[in-house]
Image 1: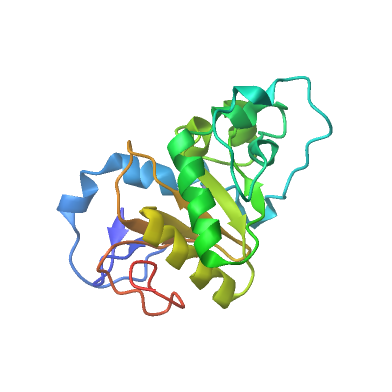
Image 2: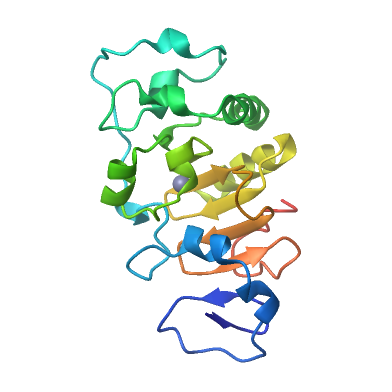
Amino acid sequence: MIYDAQNQIRPPGHLAFSGPLRPDLVALPPFFRDGIGPTGQWDDEGGTTEQPHTVAGSELNYEQSPIIMSHFDIREFDSPDQPGSGVYMKIKFLEMLDAAREQAGIPFRVNSGYRTPTHNAAVGGVPDSAHTRGWAADIAARTLEQKMRIVRAARTVGFNRFGIYDTFVHLDCDPGKRADVAWNGKGYALARGGDFSGWGFDPFSV
Ligand SMILES: [Zn+2]
């Protein structure tokens, strides 16, 4: 793994860097695995080719879901290959997302919520992606303003892991992964307090 002077982590093959290596960060493999998929690229989210999915009917019983959300239907979180699987989303996550949507005041379209391991692999997610455990969702966002509003609201309600991509924002509060980190579709990751100049905004202070 390669770091530059701002502790930005560069993907394999990206040799333009200057500054010391950071062995303290090297000892955090779950963080790296989250961002770097099997191809060696930062494709936890399946890249920008990931499309919103729709659910055509369902045989499964959504009444299992014990919470009522103001802004979402649990079916929006289904893995596209398993109708009904939205119920595998963590209740805490859904409550936080619903609260973030309320605060943001703009529509949250769920591009990807729960993923079966099969679907996760199909979209290029890493094997232990937070999506496979119901701790993450990707929210469509194309403008900088939309991304800022979504991330600001999400952080306010307790989200602490953010992926900033061209067409969506990944929101994540997986307790099994390193907190207070952000990564983007260009191959960079930073911890809170890092130098986010060039990212458009700092996810931890926006
Ligand atoms: Zn995601």
